Length: 131
Image (cartoon, rainbow, N blue to C red; front, side, top):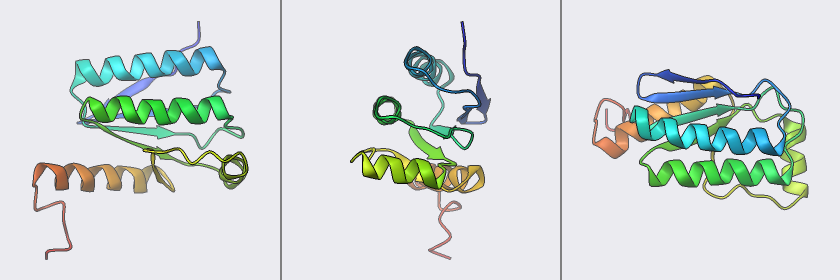
């Protein structure tokens, strides 16, 4: 059975999808991620989809569901690495991915999670706007 590895990096979980997604694998990822957020106490999830050429409507809904579930569990989710063709297809399909934060790449996604986590926890070091 295929599984997508989930890596823990400090208070974040990192998922890099390197295989073609099918519905069962997407559902397994959703279950594994929500379980790992609960057991690890992670406050952020970063999902890298840069290797995906296609994101269909089911996968789009799964990303949105994962973001909603992790948010309820006190963790933000950022999807990074979306290829232009994938973004165009999602817009043409009318999918807006409600509740899903996106960033251009892993660096920007980690920066977004760190800033949001610092802001929500009242950490003044994460906010450079006040300096």
